[in-house]
Image 1 (tube, helix red, strand yellow):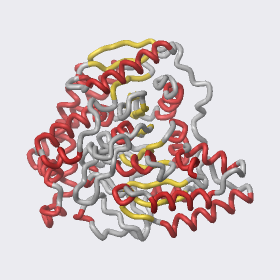
Image 2 (tube, rainbow, N blue to C red; image 1 turned 180 degrees about the horizontal axis):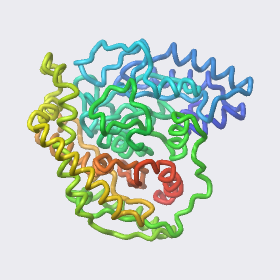
Image 3 (cartoon, rainbow, N blue to C red; image 1 turned 120 degrees about the vertical axis):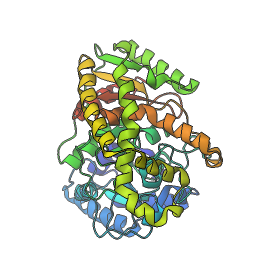
Length: 443
Protein backbone atom coordinates (compact mmCIF):
# COMPACT_ATOMS: atom_id res chain seq x y z
CA UNK A 1 0.00 0.00 0.00
CA UNK A 2 2.90 2.37 0.67
CA UNK A 3 3.72 2.45 -3.05
CA UNK A 4 0.27 3.85 -3.78
CA UNK A 5 0.88 6.91 -1.61
CA UNK A 6 3.30 8.34 -4.17
CA UNK A 7 1.26 7.47 -7.25
CA UNK A 8 -0.61 10.17 -9.13
CA UNK A 9 -4.13 11.06 -8.07
CA UNK A 10 -5.59 9.94 -11.39
CA UNK A 11 -3.71 6.63 -11.21
CA UNK A 12 -5.24 6.04 -7.79
CA UNK A 13 -8.67 6.89 -9.17
CA UNK A 14 -8.27 4.42 -12.03
CA UNK A 15 -7.25 1.69 -9.61
CA UNK A 16 -10.33 2.40 -7.48
CA UNK A 17 -12.51 2.21 -10.61
CA UNK A 18 -10.98 -1.15 -11.53
CA UNK A 19 -11.49 -2.55 -8.03
CA UNK A 20 -7.75 -2.85 -7.43
CA UNK A 21 -7.66 -0.21 -4.69
CA UNK A 22 -10.06 0.46 -1.81
CA UNK A 23 -10.66 4.15 -0.92
CA UNK A 24 -10.90 3.36 2.78
CA UNK A 25 -7.68 1.33 2.83
CA UNK A 26 -5.95 4.09 0.87
CA UNK A 27 -7.19 6.80 3.24
CA UNK A 28 -6.15 4.81 6.29
CA UNK A 29 -2.70 4.39 4.78
CA UNK A 30 -2.38 8.16 4.26
CA UNK A 31 -3.53 8.85 7.81
CA UNK A 32 -1.04 6.32 9.19
CA UNK A 33 1.74 7.85 7.09
CA UNK A 34 0.87 11.34 8.35
CA UNK A 35 0.86 10.23 11.99
CA UNK A 36 4.18 8.42 11.57
CA UNK A 37 6.00 11.15 9.65
CA UNK A 38 8.58 13.01 11.75
CA UNK A 39 7.87 16.29 9.93
CA UNK A 40 4.06 16.03 9.96
CA UNK A 41 3.57 18.99 12.33
CA UNK A 42 5.52 21.18 9.93
CA UNK A 43 3.30 20.12 7.04
CA UNK A 44 -0.25 19.78 8.39
CA UNK A 45 -1.75 22.54 10.53
CA UNK A 46 -4.85 20.48 11.36
CA UNK A 47 -5.98 16.96 10.63
CA UNK A 48 -9.53 15.94 9.73
CA UNK A 49 -9.25 12.22 10.44
CA UNK A 50 -12.86 11.58 11.43
CA UNK A 51 -14.13 13.41 8.37
CA UNK A 52 -11.65 11.63 6.13
CA UNK A 53 -12.71 8.18 7.34
CA UNK A 54 -16.42 8.94 6.93
CA UNK A 55 -15.81 10.24 3.41
CA UNK A 56 -13.69 7.19 2.60
CA UNK A 57 -16.38 4.78 3.78
CA UNK A 58 -18.89 6.52 1.52
CA UNK A 59 -16.42 6.39 -1.40
CA UNK A 60 -15.89 2.67 -0.82
CA UNK A 61 -19.64 2.07 -1.00
CA UNK A 62 -19.94 4.02 -4.25
CA UNK A 63 -17.03 2.13 -5.77
CA UNK A 64 -18.55 -1.23 -4.84
CA UNK A 65 -21.92 -0.23 -6.31
CA UNK A 66 -20.51 1.22 -9.53
CA UNK A 67 -21.65 4.72 -8.60
CA UNK A 68 -18.36 6.64 -8.55
CA UNK A 69 -18.83 10.36 -9.15
CA UNK A 70 -15.72 11.02 -11.21
CA UNK A 71 -12.03 10.23 -11.75
CA UNK A 72 -10.99 11.48 -8.30
CA UNK A 73 -13.76 9.84 -6.26
CA UNK A 74 -12.07 8.18 -3.30
CA UNK A 75 -8.77 10.07 -3.71
CA UNK A 76 -7.33 11.89 -0.67
CA UNK A 77 -6.43 15.59 -0.89
CA UNK A 78 -4.87 18.19 1.41
CA UNK A 79 -6.18 21.76 1.65
CA UNK A 80 -4.20 24.93 2.30
CA UNK A 81 -5.04 26.66 5.58
CA UNK A 82 -6.96 29.44 3.84
CA UNK A 83 -9.80 27.27 2.57
CA UNK A 84 -12.67 27.32 5.05
CA UNK A 85 -13.40 23.85 6.46
CA UNK A 86 -16.47 23.26 8.59
CA UNK A 87 -15.58 22.84 12.28
CA UNK A 88 -11.84 22.92 11.48
CA UNK A 89 -9.54 25.85 12.34
CA UNK A 90 -8.68 27.97 9.32
CA UNK A 91 -6.20 30.70 10.23
CA UNK A 92 -4.33 31.45 6.98
CA UNK A 93 -1.06 30.85 8.79
CA UNK A 94 -1.52 33.84 11.09
CA UNK A 95 -1.87 34.31 14.85
CA UNK A 96 -4.27 37.14 14.01
CA UNK A 97 -6.82 34.51 12.99
CA UNK A 98 -6.00 31.94 15.68
CA UNK A 99 -9.13 30.07 16.74
CA UNK A 100 -11.08 31.04 13.63
CA UNK A 101 -13.31 28.02 12.93
CA UNK A 102 -15.72 28.32 9.99
CA UNK A 103 -19.19 26.82 10.07
CA UNK A 104 -19.08 25.59 6.47
CA UNK A 105 -16.65 24.56 3.76
CA UNK A 106 -15.32 26.88 1.07
CA UNK A 107 -17.20 26.47 -2.20
CA UNK A 108 -14.34 24.61 -3.91
CA UNK A 109 -14.06 22.21 -0.98
CA UNK A 110 -17.83 21.59 -1.06
CA UNK A 111 -17.62 20.77 -4.75
CA UNK A 112 -14.62 18.49 -4.21
CA UNK A 113 -16.46 16.69 -1.41
CA UNK A 114 -19.53 16.23 -3.61
CA UNK A 115 -17.25 14.79 -6.29
CA UNK A 116 -16.13 12.16 -3.80
CA UNK A 117 -12.66 13.31 -2.75
CA UNK A 118 -11.36 12.77 0.77
CA UNK A 119 -10.23 15.70 2.94
CA UNK A 120 -7.12 14.68 4.90
CA UNK A 121 -6.61 18.03 6.62
CA UNK A 122 -5.24 21.55 6.37
CA UNK A 123 -1.67 22.42 5.43
CA UNK A 124 0.64 25.15 6.72
CA UNK A 125 1.25 28.25 4.64
CA UNK A 126 2.97 31.61 4.62
CA UNK A 127 1.21 34.12 6.86
CA UNK A 128 -1.79 35.48 4.93
CA UNK A 129 -0.18 34.04 1.76
CA UNK A 130 2.04 37.11 1.52
CA UNK A 131 5.43 35.62 0.57
CA UNK A 132 6.87 33.31 -2.04
CA UNK A 133 9.40 31.68 0.30
CA UNK A 134 7.24 29.54 2.57
CA UNK A 135 8.91 30.75 5.77
CA UNK A 136 6.50 31.07 8.71
CA UNK A 137 7.95 31.25 12.24
CA UNK A 138 4.48 32.13 13.59
CA UNK A 139 2.98 28.71 12.90
CA UNK A 140 5.43 26.40 11.10
CA UNK A 141 7.76 26.31 8.12
CA UNK A 142 7.27 23.14 6.07
CA UNK A 143 10.37 21.38 4.70
CA UNK A 144 11.50 21.32 1.09
CA UNK A 145 11.61 17.76 -0.19
CA UNK A 146 15.13 18.29 -1.57
CA UNK A 147 16.57 19.98 1.55
CA UNK A 148 14.80 19.84 4.89
CA UNK A 149 16.71 22.91 6.10
CA UNK A 150 15.55 25.01 3.16
CA UNK A 151 12.19 26.72 2.70
CA UNK A 152 9.74 24.91 0.39
CA UNK A 153 8.39 27.92 -1.47
CA UNK A 154 5.16 29.68 -0.70
CA UNK A 155 2.70 30.50 0.05
CA UNK A 156 1.20 27.03 -0.56
CA UNK A 157 4.17 25.52 1.26
CA UNK A 158 2.48 22.72 3.18
CA UNK A 159 0.34 21.84 0.16
CA UNK A 160 3.51 21.09 -1.81
CA UNK A 161 5.17 19.24 1.05
CA UNK A 162 2.09 17.06 1.65
CA UNK A 163 2.32 15.71 -1.91
CA UNK A 164 6.11 15.62 -2.22
CA UNK A 165 6.46 13.60 1.01
CA UNK A 166 3.69 11.16 0.08
CA UNK A 167 1.17 12.50 2.62
CA UNK A 168 -1.56 13.41 0.10
CA UNK A 169 -2.35 12.53 -3.49
CA UNK A 170 -2.87 16.19 -4.45
CA UNK A 171 -2.60 19.48 -2.58
CA UNK A 172 -5.01 22.34 -3.12
CA UNK A 173 -3.43 25.78 -2.89
CA UNK A 174 -3.88 29.35 -4.00
CA UNK A 175 -1.81 31.57 -6.28
CA UNK A 176 -1.80 35.37 -6.01
CA UNK A 177 1.76 36.04 -7.16
CA UNK A 178 3.22 32.56 -7.61
CA UNK A 179 2.01 30.70 -4.52
CA UNK A 180 1.14 27.47 -6.37
CA UNK A 181 3.93 27.48 -8.93
CA UNK A 182 6.90 28.30 -6.68
CA UNK A 183 6.36 25.53 -4.08
CA UNK A 184 5.45 23.12 -6.88
CA UNK A 185 8.72 23.90 -8.68
CA UNK A 186 10.88 23.75 -5.56
CA UNK A 187 9.38 20.36 -4.62
CA UNK A 188 9.55 18.86 -8.14
CA UNK A 189 5.79 18.90 -8.71
CA UNK A 190 3.38 20.18 -11.34
CA UNK A 191 1.47 23.31 -10.38
CA UNK A 192 -1.39 25.06 -12.18
CA UNK A 193 -2.22 28.74 -11.78
CA UNK A 194 -5.76 28.95 -13.08
CA UNK A 195 -7.14 32.03 -14.79
CA UNK A 196 -8.39 34.57 -12.27
CA UNK A 197 -12.15 34.27 -11.85
CA UNK A 198 -12.37 30.73 -13.19
CA UNK A 199 -12.76 29.02 -9.79
CA UNK A 200 -14.79 30.29 -6.86
CA UNK A 201 -13.08 32.20 -4.05
CA UNK A 202 -16.11 31.92 -1.77
CA UNK A 203 -14.81 30.79 1.62
CA UNK A 204 -11.16 31.42 0.72
CA UNK A 205 -9.31 33.81 3.05
CA UNK A 206 -8.28 36.65 0.71
CA UNK A 207 -5.01 38.46 0.14
CA UNK A 208 -5.63 40.50 -3.02
CA UNK A 209 -9.03 39.62 -4.44
CA UNK A 210 -8.30 40.79 -7.98
CA UNK A 211 -5.37 38.37 -8.19
CA UNK A 212 -6.25 35.44 -5.89
CA UNK A 213 -6.73 32.12 -7.70
CA UNK A 214 -7.26 28.49 -6.67
CA UNK A 215 -4.99 25.80 -8.10
CA UNK A 216 -3.65 22.25 -7.62
CA UNK A 217 -0.15 21.02 -6.80
CA UNK A 218 0.25 17.48 -8.08
CA UNK A 219 2.45 14.75 -9.50
CA UNK A 220 1.25 15.10 -13.10
CA UNK A 221 -0.42 17.43 -15.57
CA UNK A 222 -3.21 14.87 -15.80
CA UNK A 223 -3.91 15.31 -12.09
CA UNK A 224 -4.15 19.08 -12.52
CA UNK A 225 -6.56 18.67 -15.44
CA UNK A 226 -8.71 16.27 -13.42
CA UNK A 227 -8.85 18.68 -10.48
CA UNK A 228 -9.85 21.66 -12.61
CA UNK A 229 -12.55 19.67 -14.40
CA UNK A 230 -13.87 18.30 -11.10
CA UNK A 231 -14.31 21.75 -9.59
CA UNK A 232 -15.99 22.96 -12.78
CA UNK A 233 -18.31 19.94 -12.88
CA UNK A 234 -17.23 18.60 -16.26
CA UNK A 235 -15.07 15.94 -17.87
CA UNK A 236 -11.30 16.55 -17.87
CA UNK A 237 -9.60 17.89 -20.96
CA UNK A 238 -8.51 15.14 -23.35
CA UNK A 239 -4.72 15.13 -23.02
CA UNK A 240 -4.13 12.17 -25.36
CA UNK A 241 -2.31 12.72 -28.60
CA UNK A 242 -1.08 16.21 -27.79
CA UNK A 243 2.03 16.90 -29.85
CA UNK A 244 4.82 19.47 -29.68
CA UNK A 245 5.76 19.18 -33.35
CA UNK A 246 5.38 22.52 -35.08
CA UNK A 247 4.42 24.38 -31.91
CA UNK A 248 5.76 27.90 -31.51
CA UNK A 249 7.10 28.91 -28.10
CA UNK A 250 8.47 32.29 -27.08
CA UNK A 251 11.27 32.34 -24.52
CA UNK A 252 10.61 35.50 -22.53
CA UNK A 253 14.05 37.03 -22.18
CA UNK A 254 15.01 40.11 -20.18
CA UNK A 255 13.59 40.41 -16.68
CA UNK A 256 13.04 36.65 -16.03
CA UNK A 257 16.77 36.02 -16.43
CA UNK A 258 18.15 38.93 -14.40
CA UNK A 259 20.21 37.66 -11.43
CA UNK A 260 19.22 34.08 -12.25
CA UNK A 261 21.26 31.42 -10.43
CA UNK A 262 23.28 28.89 -12.45
CA UNK A 263 21.18 25.81 -11.62
CA UNK A 264 17.74 27.08 -12.76
CA UNK A 265 19.34 28.77 -15.77
CA UNK A 266 21.01 25.54 -16.83
CA UNK A 267 17.88 23.47 -16.16
CA UNK A 268 15.80 25.82 -18.30
CA UNK A 269 18.22 25.79 -21.24
CA UNK A 270 18.47 22.00 -21.13
CA UNK A 271 14.68 21.80 -21.23
CA UNK A 272 14.55 24.18 -24.20
CA UNK A 273 16.99 21.99 -26.11
CA UNK A 274 14.74 18.97 -25.51
CA UNK A 275 11.70 20.95 -26.66
CA UNK A 276 13.48 21.90 -29.88
CA UNK A 277 14.45 18.28 -30.44
CA UNK A 278 10.75 17.39 -30.07
CA UNK A 279 9.84 19.77 -32.88
CA UNK A 280 9.09 23.02 -31.06
CA UNK A 281 10.02 26.20 -32.92
CA UNK A 282 11.59 28.42 -30.27
CA UNK A 283 11.91 32.19 -30.57
CA UNK A 284 13.63 34.39 -28.02
CA UNK A 285 12.63 37.98 -27.39
CA UNK A 286 12.57 40.67 -24.74
CA UNK A 287 9.18 42.37 -24.38
CA UNK A 288 9.48 45.82 -22.78
CA UNK A 289 5.81 45.58 -21.80
CA UNK A 290 6.82 43.02 -19.16
CA UNK A 291 9.12 45.51 -17.42
CA UNK A 292 6.31 48.08 -17.48
CA UNK A 293 3.93 45.57 -15.90
CA UNK A 294 6.36 44.55 -13.15
CA UNK A 295 6.95 48.20 -12.29
CA UNK A 296 3.26 48.50 -11.40
CA UNK A 297 3.10 45.52 -9.04
CA UNK A 298 3.91 47.34 -5.79
CA UNK A 299 1.33 50.04 -6.53
CA UNK A 300 -1.37 47.41 -7.10
CA UNK A 301 -0.66 44.47 -4.77
CA UNK A 302 0.21 46.23 -1.53
CA UNK A 303 -2.80 48.60 -1.39
CA UNK A 304 -5.16 45.66 -2.03
CA UNK A 305 -3.61 43.59 0.74
CA UNK A 306 -3.47 46.53 3.16
CA UNK A 307 -7.10 47.49 2.51
CA UNK A 308 -8.15 43.89 3.20
CA UNK A 309 -6.43 43.51 6.57
CA UNK A 310 -5.46 46.92 7.97
CA UNK A 311 -8.25 47.04 10.59
CA UNK A 312 -7.37 43.62 12.01
CA UNK A 313 -3.63 44.31 11.86
CA UNK A 314 -4.17 47.48 13.87
CA UNK A 315 -5.46 45.39 16.79
CA UNK A 316 -2.47 43.03 17.20
CA UNK A 317 0.34 43.91 14.84
CA UNK A 318 2.90 42.58 17.32
CA UNK A 319 1.86 38.94 16.75
CA UNK A 320 2.79 39.06 13.07
CA UNK A 321 6.07 38.00 11.44
CA UNK A 322 7.80 41.41 10.98
CA UNK A 323 8.70 41.04 7.28
CA UNK A 324 5.08 40.16 6.47
CA UNK A 325 3.83 43.08 8.55
CA UNK A 326 6.20 45.40 6.69
CA UNK A 327 4.85 44.22 3.33
CA UNK A 328 1.29 44.95 4.43
CA UNK A 329 2.16 48.38 5.79
CA UNK A 330 3.81 49.31 2.50
CA UNK A 331 0.26 49.57 1.19
CA UNK A 332 -0.18 52.77 3.19
CA UNK A 333 2.29 54.55 0.91
CA UNK A 334 0.01 54.65 -2.14
CA UNK A 335 -2.98 56.90 -2.71
CA UNK A 336 -6.28 55.86 -4.25
CA UNK A 337 -5.31 57.92 -7.30
CA UNK A 338 -2.05 55.95 -7.63
CA UNK A 339 -3.93 52.67 -7.40
CA UNK A 340 -6.61 53.58 -9.97
CA UNK A 341 -4.06 55.00 -12.39
CA UNK A 342 -1.96 51.85 -12.07
CA UNK A 343 -4.93 49.61 -12.85
CA UNK A 344 -5.88 51.73 -15.84
CA UNK A 345 -2.33 51.42 -17.11
CA UNK A 346 -2.23 47.68 -16.42
CA UNK A 347 -5.35 47.06 -18.48
CA UNK A 348 -3.70 48.76 -21.46
CA UNK A 349 -0.49 46.76 -20.97
CA UNK A 350 -2.41 43.48 -20.75
CA UNK A 351 -3.93 44.06 -24.17
CA UNK A 352 -0.55 45.06 -25.59
CA UNK A 353 1.10 41.90 -24.26
CA UNK A 354 -1.60 39.61 -25.68
CA UNK A 355 -1.25 41.20 -29.11
CA UNK A 356 2.53 40.74 -29.03
CA UNK A 357 2.37 37.01 -28.16
CA UNK A 358 -0.67 36.15 -30.28
CA UNK A 359 1.41 34.13 -32.76
CA UNK A 360 2.80 31.75 -30.13
CA UNK A 361 1.33 28.63 -28.56
CA UNK A 362 2.91 29.48 -25.22
CA UNK A 363 5.44 31.76 -23.55
CA UNK A 364 8.07 29.94 -21.50
CA UNK A 365 10.45 31.03 -18.73
CA UNK A 366 12.14 29.65 -15.60
CA UNK A 367 9.55 29.25 -12.85
CA UNK A 368 11.88 30.78 -10.26
CA UNK A 369 15.31 32.31 -10.86
CA UNK A 370 16.69 30.86 -7.61
CA UNK A 371 16.73 27.67 -5.56
CA UNK A 372 15.19 27.24 -2.09
CA UNK A 373 17.14 29.40 0.41
CA UNK A 374 18.19 28.20 3.85
CA UNK A 375 15.42 28.89 6.39
CA UNK A 376 17.76 29.81 9.25
CA UNK A 377 19.58 32.39 7.15
CA UNK A 378 16.28 33.97 6.07
CA UNK A 379 15.25 34.30 9.71
CA UNK A 380 18.56 35.78 10.75
CA UNK A 381 18.93 38.32 7.94
CA UNK A 382 15.94 40.56 7.10
CA UNK A 383 17.75 42.07 4.12
CA UNK A 384 18.42 38.63 2.69
CA UNK A 385 14.78 37.68 3.28
CA UNK A 386 13.55 40.75 1.41
CA UNK A 387 15.81 40.35 -1.62
CA UNK A 388 15.25 36.59 -1.93
CA UNK A 389 11.49 36.96 -1.58
CA UNK A 390 11.26 39.56 -4.33
CA UNK A 391 13.55 37.54 -6.59
CA UNK A 392 11.56 34.36 -5.93
CA UNK A 393 8.25 35.99 -6.90
CA UNK A 394 9.43 38.00 -9.90
CA UNK A 395 8.94 35.48 -12.68
CA UNK A 396 5.65 34.01 -11.49
CA UNK A 397 4.17 37.44 -10.77
CA UNK A 398 4.33 38.21 -14.49
CA UNK A 399 1.52 35.74 -15.11
CA UNK A 400 -0.63 37.14 -12.29
CA UNK A 401 -0.16 40.74 -13.32
CA UNK A 402 -1.07 39.93 -16.91
CA UNK A 403 -4.11 37.86 -15.91
CA UNK A 404 -2.79 34.70 -17.61
CA UNK A 405 -3.05 31.01 -16.82
CA UNK A 406 0.29 29.31 -16.15
CA UNK A 407 1.72 25.89 -15.51
CA UNK A 408 5.04 24.80 -13.97
CA UNK A 409 6.69 21.49 -14.74
CA UNK A 410 9.69 19.85 -13.05
CA UNK A 411 12.96 19.50 -14.94
CA UNK A 412 15.89 17.15 -14.44
CA UNK A 413 17.39 19.59 -11.92
CA UNK A 414 15.94 19.34 -8.39
CA UNK A 415 13.89 22.39 -7.37
CA UNK A 416 14.13 23.98 -10.82
CA UNK A 417 10.92 24.29 -12.84
CA UNK A 418 10.01 25.47 -16.30
CA UNK A 419 6.83 27.50 -16.73
CA UNK A 420 4.57 28.03 -19.68
CA UNK A 421 1.94 30.77 -19.86
CA UNK A 422 -1.14 31.18 -22.06
CA UNK A 423 -3.87 33.81 -22.44
CA UNK A 424 -6.74 33.96 -19.95
CA UNK A 425 -9.29 31.12 -19.97
CA UNK A 426 -7.06 28.90 -22.13
CA UNK A 427 -6.29 26.64 -19.17
CA UNK A 428 -7.30 23.43 -20.95
CA UNK A 429 -5.16 24.22 -24.00
CA UNK A 430 -2.28 24.97 -21.64
CA UNK A 431 -2.76 21.63 -19.92
CA UNK A 432 -2.66 19.80 -23.25
CA UNK A 433 0.65 21.49 -24.05
CA UNK A 434 1.92 20.65 -20.57
CA UNK A 435 0.99 17.00 -21.00
CA UNK A 436 3.06 16.86 -24.18
CA UNK A 437 5.95 18.64 -22.47
CA UNK A 438 6.24 16.90 -19.10
CA UNK A 439 8.09 13.80 -20.29
CA UNK A 440 10.11 15.72 -22.89
CA UNK A 441 11.64 18.25 -20.49
CA UNK A 442 12.82 15.50 -18.16
CA UNK A 443 14.43 13.48 -20.94
